[in-house]
Image (tube, rainbow, N blue to C red; front, side):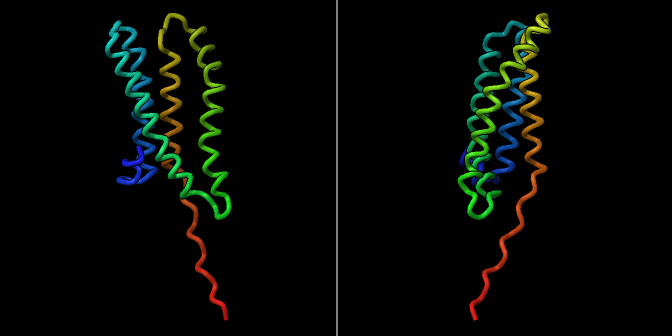
Length: 138
């Protein structure tokens, strides 16, 4: 993840990794329908690797977006948002799975769609304006 962020930039690195992670989750209902154990393991492994690879890009992007004097807050925000999602999402996804019991993996597909949409939002984040030039002392 960090290598990709350095190579292609944090925004593109985080976006590609997030889309891969979401796509892996979207594949889980298809895998369940075919009863393919190895394909299920592959989807989960791809999701896990992609989410891990996304973190350095998101953190680097947070550093770039940080206002002077707000670097610590900027670095804490992605972690806090991720923690909040992991605390709240299981309740909603569980309710969805309970509401549609004839569709195994629908909760994973919903999480995948949310991951892709949230990740694509990174493409629309504006970079902060460059800092003003230093003032010359007279």
